[in-house]
Image 1 (cartoon, rainbow, N blue to C red):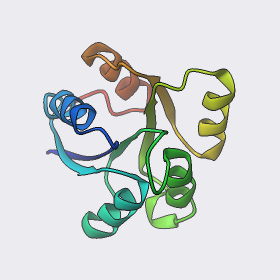
Image 2 (cartoon, rainbow, N blue to C red):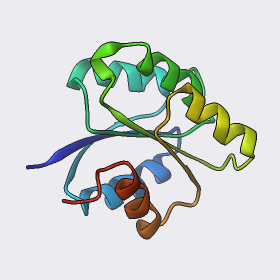
Image 3 (cartoon, rainbow, N blue to C red):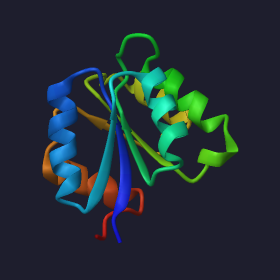
Image 4 (cartoon, rainbow, N blue to C red):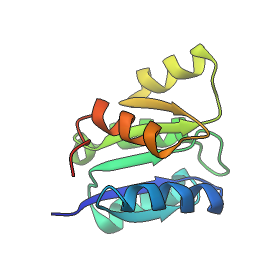
Length: 125
């Protein structure tokens, strides 16, 4: 059975890369270019198994997106991984405190993604 993922990043190239990596892991993919679009996509498609979200985006950044998702009980089981170039320990702590399940620093490789998926319980196809 295919799992679903939402990739939220303002870079089309990053979304394409993450999509390619997730498709190899048997995920059906939905995309959004910022946090506000990501929230709209969640309303359209319903809860997904996984969200990969960037921090720095226009309109609504990843941290605001995580807080908005975590404020809604319908999405309490959605796994959220922040995928960003922000590598400061304070950023990592803020994302995890906001409700991210894991944190990955760009560039994210296929092996790095598999490791994060295993850590959040989504490693097996």
